[in-house]
Amino acid sequence: SLGLTLVMLAFVVRLLQVQAVDASAYAAKAEKNRYLSHKLAAERGEITDRSGVPLATSVDAYDITADPKMFTPQESKVPDAPEQAAALLAPILGKDPAELVRTLKSPPSPRYAVLARKQTPQVWNQIKDLRTLFAKKAREDKARGGPGVSVLAGVLSERSSKRVYPNGTLGAGILGYVNADGRGAGGLESMLDEELAGRDGKITYAHSGGRRVPTAGARETPAVPGSDIELTIDRDIQWAAQKAISEQVAASRADRGYVVVQNTRTGEVLAMANAPGFDPNDLSQADSTAMGNAALQDAYEPGSTAKVMSMAAVLEEGVATPGTHVVVPNRLHRGDRLFKDDIDHPTWYLTLNGVLAKSSNIGTILATGQLGPDQAAANRVLHSYLRKFGMGSPTGLGYPGETSGILAAPKDWNTSQQYTIPFGQGLSLNAMQAASVYSTIANGGVRVAPTLVRGTRGPDGRFTPAPAPGTTRVVSEKTAKTLAAMLESVVDDQEGTGTKAAIPGYRVAGKTGTANRVDPQLGRYKGYTASFAGFAPADAPQLTVYCAIQNPTQGSYFGGQICGPVHKKVMEFALKTLHVAPTGKQPPRMPVTFTPGA
Image (cartoon, rainbow, N blue to C red; front, top):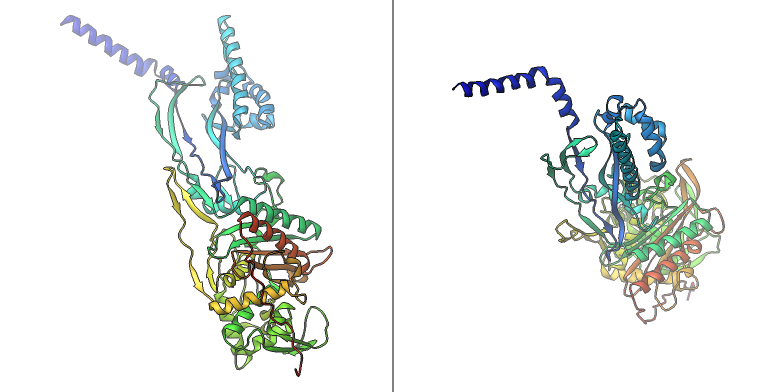
């Protein structure tokens, strides 16, 4: 009994000693062996082209962190530990030593500071080697009776990942980029951030003297990787489109240009190229005006490529046929304006087919004027077709910053717009909308909403196809086939404006456009938008290619002259890449002119 009492008394004395006498010493020790928590970064999903070729991927990286407490004079046993550590780390991290000193002396948290994010494994290995060297010196110093403390003991790392774009500028306008925190900040990286990002995990572990204590109950919630996104883009066709438009924009000293390539039947976008572009691997060198996706974000007046919608309305409403005679004077007085074609000419005796082939503004005004008993009624009919073709509506891609363009209600068309909208001035669109119009004609009059995403592959490896795109019947198959034949006259007939887009062996349907351009800085017309839209093979369409160049200032500014060749290069490359054979049939060659009185 006495023995038991003595044992109990010893426990009580020891408890008093721990709780009262040595409490501060134990608290300090506990603080030194404190538990630390940090996130486990989820691996971001890849973005690939339609064949699985990576367009955006993630590589291993490290965030270099520190425990600022270990750089205080009390812990480091030297008065200038932050300065010493900064001098050693700055050359490796490419940072200003003064900035590192500030971070270590005035951290956002007393036990945690980030010195540099997204560093390569090689950088962390260099720091580890230095740490090992200084730790060895500290042990030797301690053996000699010194304090034995390394100024780098408090430098730590967290596994992270860095976003890389293996093809540099290729498709950058579509892909976008990630910010310093690794979150999507532009383009598809932003639009699909939730799917790509995954879910971060968390780890908590004991930490003592700059080292992790392996036996002290760590708790870990593993990270869930993001899904991979497979795009409809074909990397090779994207490359050809980007090369062709970049070269022409440079040659024309233009503000910018875009090319869209679309599968006419599925609506899949095979390429969407912008020039100038940017390299998402190095945003510090990027021009902020080139960092978006201008093919979807620029709204501009299309000019004569829009005449195909006017002709579709005229044919579908049955007010004219390709052979209908249209007498086209050199000037046409309508409202308070005199309208003209792009060149002065004697009175032209054109068929409706010829109006399109020669891209006559006056002929188009005369033809669309037949859509109703008066101009107001004709305007309403034309407007209904423009809406069905997708004007004034989002494309369906859901892309961040995409413009719907501008199409006023017919009651709001001013005197000028009533006659300019039929030939593509007084309304605006983006390049994807313009391409979609031609894909609709090529697809027998059915508009298929464009798509950029084929599907996603989750962390479990299962592929989920994207939902089927919506479809809308815009015009009858008969009207679409007639229009395709008329569009061949633009490229195939010597009278046509698009002969530079002809591809030997293939039948090409297309349309040129040269529009007056609204200068976004000045808010008035200045310069031109040159464009060309077309599809091939004309009698069994598979591909649409649309090109537009903004404000060409050197050489020609006509769409047929500068966008026709871009269309040809890209279309020829795409047809060969996809092994599309020529149909071998002869084009119909409908008459362009008629002889009066004959």
